Image (cartoon, rainbow, N blue to C red; front, top):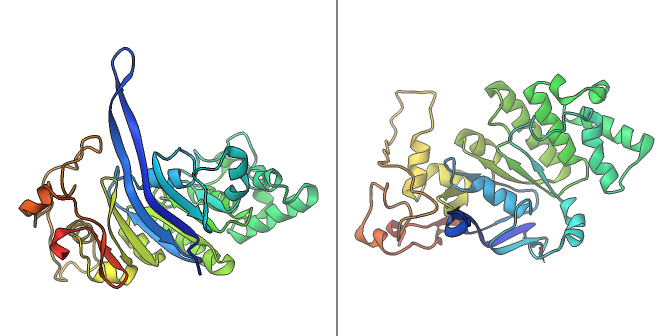
Length: 321
């Protein structure tokens, strides 16, 4: 069976403008040639430090911002080249849950209108049928139907995120891009929302592109994990393989920084030196070489390519050649 989402060579560069005439003096390479796929009913976790380009990648795939280059195929159909009208039916199958559950909700609309608006936009339900559909969605995400008349500011952070999930779920999507959906929530609420997403995936056969920087959350929800660094994917593997046997030094460092319940348990320490380079001026060769504890002369000149080191386990590192 073909993959639901196929991303190939995706790039998003932002111009750096300076001077009185705002001339382009350079480019911020926020996303610089990433490739991956998401299968039917699968969750792909996309992780990395803040500023690595993972949220920009999600927005580019959703067509919320235009891509610089590359290909995005949804069920085999290229969507980056589609015009606004041709893209409209595809948006029903490609929904998003945003990081900030308050900023993504219209404060002037009642919650029921927020969740029901997509149903009207796609002509799925109107009037009484729409109200019943919205009430059922409220119950499915753990809210009460009588809360449909409340406004966003009357909900807690966790409840607002449930509203966002209900809105994304309303039109029967196939893929939901979850852009750090629990990072703004308390830990106990995070667990509730993550478990809700897992249950909804099992019930509706949903696929998720789950963008996050919290590796504990990613390990719980993802089937496969892609690790991003400075606009590039440096490792891609099955969740178990990646957490047990990371093949890229950057992934090693990320996993070494995750808190563990048992402080006496032996663990490998990986300390990175220096700061993350600017995406407007990435270093030559391997972009991680300025901070890598295993750097070789080859790393400073030759960019490593993402290749399959073990079955289903890809890494972009000269150590694995």
